[in-house]
Amino acid sequence: MATLRSCLYAMRSCPQDLRSLERGAHSFVHRSTRRRLCHARPVNDPRERVAATVIGASQGEEITAAGVQHLFKLTGDHTGGRFGLEEFAVPPATVGARPHIHRAHDEYFYVLTGELTVATDAGEVLLTAGDVAHAPRGSVHGFRNASERTPTTGLCMYTPAGYEQYFRDVHDAVEAGTELTIDLLTGLRARYDTESV
Image (cartoon, rainbow, N blue to C red; front, side):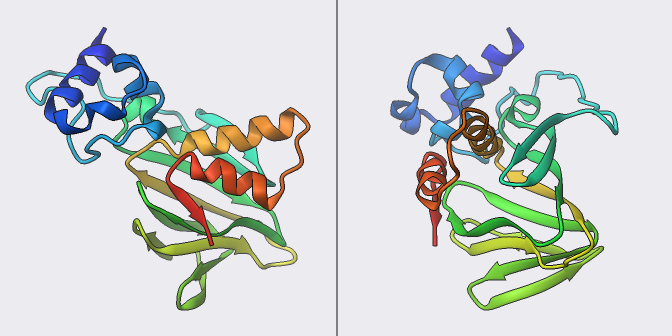
């Protein structure tokens, strides 16, 4: 019931975009990637007391997509759509994501171990442990592990949340036996206001 209340509060705070809801308030929370509501607004009444969320070190939603292991620690379901957090592991000599542009969310990459090569409009940048990259909406970015021997681990943060559904879709396609072609990935990205470059 609290989720429904939060959802209704968000809809009241952004009435101009209610047309984009597919069906009812429940759709807003669980299909957050399909909505075009004002992302910066709170989804719960600020006067309402809410419970904190604690996720243990080994807890989260594990998703393997295109060779990259994702452990989603916080998703839109945890944060009311405001923020997503994942820990990722990119094996050696693996492309994590070809260059693309997000139109509906920002991403932040923080390297924990190894090296991460990030593609930008200005060229590639090599990140090492402790380095951060910010990919705001509208920016070209992609990443890969260029090392032949060492895996890369890091954190990726999403504002707002919702893009985790893309990784679920990729995982589901692989599980169904579908070949991951560039055309398929481009189509899946398009569902989430993301363009392949």
